[in-house]
Amino acid sequence: MRPRTFLLAAVSACMVWLLISAIQDRFGSPSGQLIAEAVFIIGSLAAVGSLIALAAMGMNKRRKVKHVVQGVSGQTEDIATEKSGESSQAMHQEVRMPKTRRTPKVAFMSLLAIAVLVLCIAPIKQISYPTTERYQATEVYYEREPYVVREEYTEVQEQTVTQQKSTVLLDKLFTAYHGVRSYQTYIDIKDKSNILVNGQLTRHSGFPEVYFYVSDDTDPSFGVGTPKNPIVAAGPVGSYTFSFVPRRTGMYYFRSECYQARPRGSIKLDVNLEWQETVTKRQEVTKYRDVTKYREVPKERVVWKERPVTSSKRVSLLRYLLGY
Image (cartoon, rainbow, N blue to C red):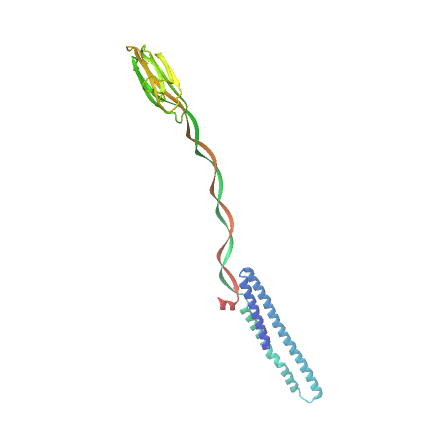
């Protein structure tokens, strides 16, 4: 085998080795290893086929040389028959000598090339390396879910109502005899409606009779004599019921006059003030309403995750020695 032929085979082996290394680096998986092994097998077959073809070409060349030498020896025998058989045998031996020397050399070079290919290319060393693996897992998560509940609540309501009210202005018991009995009281009509003063004279004992008057503080004779413009005037009476509507806020004068010489009994005077008042009341009312609330509900879903694993691949002896 010529040196340039061996160099060409070595360069081809290195190119195949680089191609397989690139495939293994790019596809670090079982599929990548299968591709690398396929490339190795194809490259090995191609290299062995190339070596066999080169050996065959060498054999053909030697045969051609042998035929040429045999032809030359025949012509030599015709021209110079005088030469002895030893010269012819020597020539044949000289032509056949390369055959005995080149056949072991070709076999040795072929085995060496195959050994280099196996060392540089064949993925025969299995190694382990860390990598990640995708897998499916069931994951529990929580989701907010609405639900409706009926709850009780209290509401304050305002209500406007009209109330009937009353108060006592006078509650007097007096003896009826010659003279005057008078009583004053203050009446306030502010912020009141449907105001009415109700009063009553009642014989308490005996048979008294009196003159009875009611006036306000606008009367000219208020508090000093018989009213000139009385609101109520009656007499002589022993029992009497009266009522009037106050005209203004102020003092009111209730006067009793008796002209009997001696006492003839006693009289009771009752006076009440009645009115209507509008007030706003607040009342708590219990009601019900629907309220939307939320709760956390567990659910499941399938997700993809990654985990570290230890994988294995096959590399050539040369790459194992250089990189691992």
